Length: 164
Ligand code: SF4
Image (cartoon, rainbow, N blue to C red; front, side, top):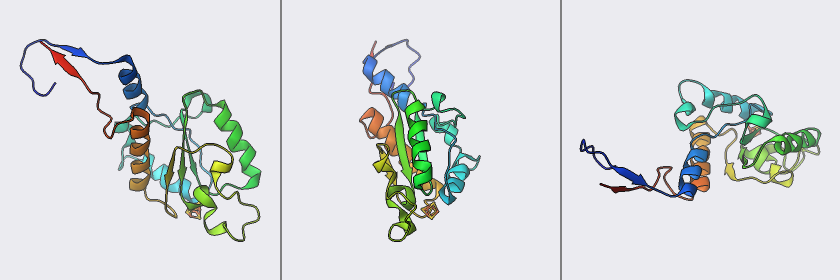
């Protein structure tokens, strides 16, 4: 409601909108990191950035997570493990690729024989966050972009009508 009037009202909305809003407001990422970008991801979870306010709460098990943030260098040795963790997550599930290494191989793109040239060759990516490493603000921007993608709206707020 736009303003408090003291009068009781009824809120009308669609079930799809409520589910999308709930889904976008309770993104639980898997506690998982690969290299230097993971330090920035851990910093993002710290109190100074407070991503809990977006409903982002890291989980220790892929079975309780709906987001995997691929933060770091994806080596061929780790590729199978990343795919397995992704497959263990329940639907609907999302992927943020954080940093140049995960996006395209980063500084190892030309000579890194051991590095996958982008995690999207293994699992589907919803949002790419550029940088080497991206700062926490950039990752938060990626999370907000994912919320927009889930709801299909530029704001995570529910469209509501009021009936008096
Ligand atoms: S993108 Fe840069 S900071 Fe991130 S894992 Fe690769 S080398 Fe490290």
